[in-house]
Image (cartoon, rainbow, N blue to C red):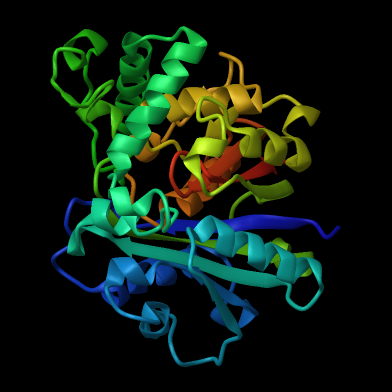
Amino acid sequence: MRDVAVVGFAQSASVRRETSGNEVEMLMPILQEVVRESGLAKQDIQFTMSGSCDYLAGQPFAFVSALDAVGAWPPIVESHVEMDGAWALYEAWVKIQTGEADSALIYAFGKSSMGDLPEVLTIQLDPYYTAPLWPDAISLAALQARAYLEASGKTERDLAEVAARNRRTAAGNPKAQIRKSADPAALLDSPYIVSPLRKHDCPPISDGCSAVLLAAGDLVKKARRKPAWIRGIDHRIEAHSLGVRDLARSVSTKLAGERAGVGKGRVDLAELHAPFTHQELILREALGLGDSVNVNPSGGALAANPMMVAGLTRIGEAATRLSAGEGKRGIAHATSGPCLQQNLVCVLEVE
């Protein structure tokens, strides 16, 4: 296995509605920033990879137009996944493992505000039994939350404490969308959206983008910051049908974590892509994270959740914080699909 490191990360501020520019205009300053801050020259980038969703953009091959943000020179080798950018990073990591490239620029973008996000997310459901019922994403998450509370003995107060902690840590993140601290008791006074979920239990609708630079070999020596090495990465998927899996557990996350090597050492921090409060608790249990682990120091997806971007951002946030000295070993997690259907786990370490 080749040693591959995260040597650069940049992200836009997540906002409820981006009105000052399209996807290309959002991406251009972020792509320029990640290259500039990494220490690598643009000519050093040997592979370009993106993650996005045409349904959000409302047009086919939206990623092709987004390539304008990369620039026409020098010519690039590129690919794309119709997924969160974390899966684009996985493909880029595989490309580097084959020896066909020593570096890769990965970026993701999403403007959820342009359409009806619950309607868009319903389209991804099983087309025969679930989608015709037209359940929205929050209603499905509420089913999962109820299943988890009944199976675990946790309470709505536990969910409120998750929300309060994420908001508290997001207060120090200038890129977060929700940075207002709140008391758990005050949060519990708010009405339900779908029982047992209230507004604080759910992710904001966000527009944003982010980019990560990977490097291997001699290119790592050019990095301006301490490299965060990818020591393990794996992703798994569970059944499409919600009725044939235990919604109170995340078996795919547990398996991906084991294959990525989560349990092989002490974990100092974890950036978990948990759009709903109960999902953070499910993920913590699946990955075996104790109370000593600093979970979501950025505020996580409860503070900013741009679709197709939030998972890649978790990897960038974890790597950046490790490089800055906030720990030696960390975990980044990304999810996609309803009720934690698909999950990716990345283990990062600084020397």
